[in-house]
Amino acid sequence: AQKITQTQPGMFVQEKEAVTLDCTYDTSDPSYGLFWYKQPSSGEMIFLIYQGSYDQQNATEGRYSLNFQKARKSANLVISASQLGDSAMYFCAMRRYNQGGKLIFGQGTELSVKP
Amino acid sequence: DVKVTQSSRYLVKRTGEKVFLECVQDMDHENMFWYRQDPGLGLRLIYFSYDVKMKEKGDIPEGYSVSREKKERFSLILESASTNQTSMYLCASSFGETGRGLNEQFFGPGTRLTVL
Image 1: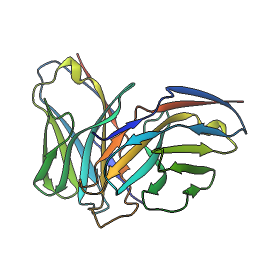
Image 2 (image 1 turned 90 degrees about the horizontal axis):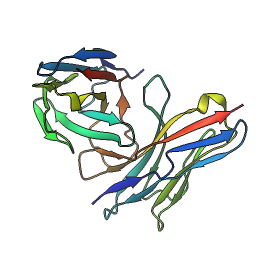
Image 3 (image 1 turned 90 degrees about the vertical axis):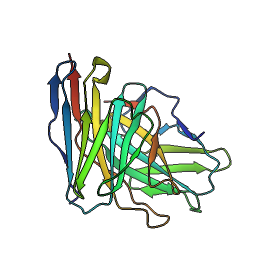
């Protein structure tokens, strides 16, 4: 069965420090995509970063990077230079290309940035 | 600018009522999705539509139905609301599968439904 696991229900980080949010996945499909979304307290889901299973390099988007370790089936999100506005829920998700674009989500990690 | 809108941010209904949650997207997306979000469980897919009048069950379809009469609109229906359907409901849309690639889902602001 395909599954996404986020083992950190909550995390704290000091402003301006880097933080890593863990995500592991389980699939037997060779072709899949991995996403990270941010959900502030206002509720909207904001797309952050994407990694395809065949991408050779780790994805980066500004202060966000995805540490993709295919053999270990992990796709950790790294946020550099944390800001107070980074306080939010973060969700890891996997899309299976042969199943109409549906996403499976992890349980989420609540990140709190301390001043 | 991609926009997915949901008819209500907050909704309070009584047990047994029929509830309609509406979602509209303006990006001509083929795919539309309804998720339910509960603490500690993440987002779970209720129903999915890949074309007008086409629908597919997600992981937790029991107690729900959907309607997609127009491409831009996807409705979630609770035929007889129950207290265990109290939750946050999120609608999303994306382009149809065009091969590998980003094709992220765009989400609406969510509807927080309380069933008393």
